[in-house]
Length: 352
Ligand SMILES: *[C@@H]1O[C@H](CO)[C@@H](O)[C@H](O)[C@H]1NC(C)=O
Ligand SMILES: *[C@@H]1O[C@H](CO)[C@@H](O)[C@H](O)[C@H]1NC(C)=O
Ligand SMILES: *[C@@H]1O[C@H](CO)[C@@H](O)[C@H](O)[C@H]1NC(C)=O
Image 1 (tube, helix red, strand yellow):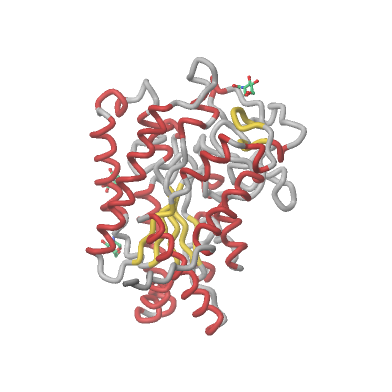
Image 2 (tube, protein in one colour):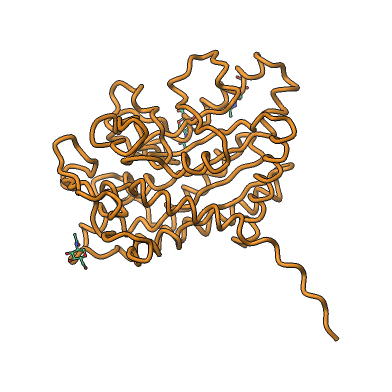
C-alpha cells in the first residue's frame, strides 16, 4: 500500500516538475501543519506561547537568526522544497491580504496546532488545522479575484499540497493528564474522533496532496523522561501506529470518493525510528536526549538561557520535541529516496 502511495506522489511530483519545465513556472505549494513545518506564523500571534523566535533557534539557519522555525536550522519542508528547486513558501501571516506572493504558495503551519480545535489550548494562540483551512479558503478567494476564476481553478488544481498534522493532538492534548480528552476518551474513541475530523478537513479542494504521517512520538525526549530509565514509551508508539494506519486507509478511501483526488500518505515512522535506534549508522552520537539542555518540567523548548551541546550534528533531537537540522537532512533524504529510488517493478512475465 505504502509503495503504491509513494509512487503516486512521485508521479505527481514528476508530472508537476515536467509541467514546470514546460511552462517555466513552478506549481504553487500550500503547506499545512504544526511546529514541524512552521516557518514563522506564530511570530505574528501576539499572545501565542508557542513561539521560537529567540536564540538558540535558527543558530544553524542561513544568517544564524531565529525565524520562527522550531529547530536549529531547516525543517524537512525547507529541505524538500530545495530538492524540488522551488522556494519554501512564506508564512501566511507575513503576507498582506492581497499579496501577489499568494499566487506562488503559502505556508499556514503553526506550532501547537492540531486536528482538533482544543489541541494546544494552553498556547493561547495558534492556527488550528481548522483555522489553516479557513485561511486557505480566503487565499483561494483572493487568487480568484486576482487572476479570474478559470486561471485560479487551474492554479489550485496543479498546486502541490503538503500536510503534516496530528502530533500535537497527542503530545499537547491526549497525553496530557490534566486535559479532559485523555480522561474522557479511550484511545480507540480518540483516534476515531481525529480521523472523522480530519476527513472533513481534507475536503479542502486539494487534488495533489501528500499527508506526512506521524513519527514515533513515544521516543521524543519529552516522552522518554516519563519512563523509568529514559526509554521509548511503547504505548504511545502503538497509538501513533494506529493513527497512521487509519489515516492511510482514510486517504485510500478519499482517493476513491473525491473526483480526481491524487492523495498520498508519506509514512516515515520507520525511518525516524531507525534513526533514533541506530544513530551511529547515520553519523549521530545521541538520540535519547536533546542537544539543547531543556527543562522538561516547564515544557521542552530551547530557551535563551539553556545550554546547548558543542557539536549540534551529533544530536538527533534539537529540543524535547523537534529533530535537529542534521536529523531533518537525513529524514528529507530518506523521504526523497523512498519516493524516487524505486521505479515501478515491471510486471513479472508469466512463465510456463
Ligand atoms: C472548530 O471551530 C470552528 C469555529 O468555531 C468550527 O466551525 C469547527 O467545526 C470546529 N472544528 C472542530 C474540529 O471542532
Ligand atoms: C469558503 O469560502 C466561500 C466563500 O466565502 C464559502 O462559501 C465556503 O463555504 C467556504 N468554505 C469553507 C470550507 O469554509
Ligand atoms: C542515553 O543513552 C546513554 C547511552 O546508552 C546513557 O548513558 C544515558 O544515560 C541516556 N540518557 C538519557 C537521558 O536517558
